[in-house]
Image 1 (cartoon, protein in one colour):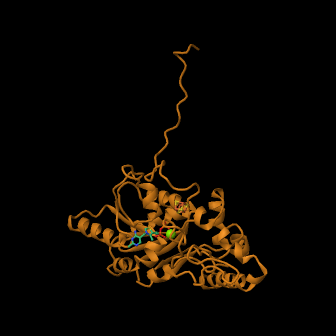
Image 2 (cartoon, rainbow, N blue to C red; image 1 turned 30 degrees about the horizontal axis):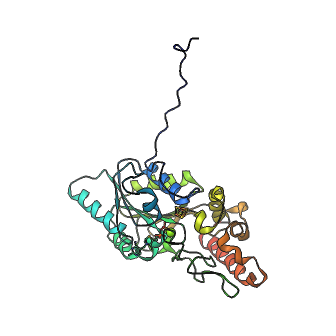
Image 3 (tube, helix red, strand yellow; image 1 turned 180 degrees about the horizontal axis):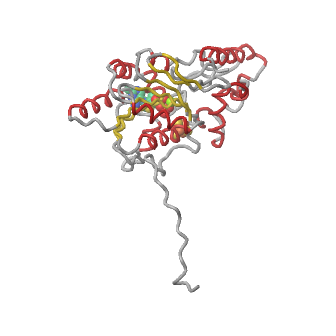
Length: 304
Ligand SMILES: Cc1ncc(C[n+]2csc(CCOP(=O)(O)OP(=O)(O)O)c2C)c(N)n1
Ligand code: SF4
Ligand SMILES: [Mg+2]
């Protein structure tokens, strides 16, 4: 075959994600993966409002953007209110076939943005709210949030000879949202991408307000190797520390059982520097408290 007649090997076309590559997230960032999966499940006929936080900062360094869809940056605390306005405008224009998503980190959702989120859920507006739960205020230097787990070390809940990191339990954000009696509230994780995408698609088909909390490991803040993101996320589920459930009108309708795959909490904690202080003789009682939290989750949701 001569050079001119040789058929060039064609690369198969790569379908580009709606949150495309080239952004500035850390290697192994669970939040970047989570947002990509959410957007690809939602599809291009979607408008997104995003709170200030890592997701917004790493994806929109001016003048570039990684979003291949209509996207707006709200304040830290009000992506739910901005999305509510977008939904109301679309409704007034008679446009009922466009998805509206509001999204934010755990700090932007469970702490500073909780009032705006509650208003959205109370009004039962046709918006899906997604919280990317990396369990601290990562973008500003790993400060603790209401979703930081018990005993995790952060820059504002340090560990030392007398202290064992965060001394508050992780806020029950799913329960708070479900208690608004909305048609759909669920948890998901980047460990199980098909389940996560299924939940986004399912939620977007349900009229009214929907809430999804996605567990997204942060290698920088949790102090684990970048390549362990999925393993860490899986262990959060199999230890009982992050239950995967669906709720409709404040009733649990579906859970991911752990069963015989149950693992001791130590398997999860040991992979992360933020829990390093729990593996000393003086921390035995604290470690026992983490075991009790996992056991309480397993019993409450019937995960065994
Ligand atoms: C009213 C207000 N307070 C504080 C800040 C500073 N700030 C920006 S992002 C951020 C942390 C975001 O944490 P989280 O919502 O958990 O998102 P993550 O960065 O972890 O993804 C803070 C404190 C701000 N932008 N606005
Ligand atoms: S600090 Fe954490 S959340 Fe932020 S980009 Fe890095 S890995 Fe992602
Ligand atoms: Mg966070």
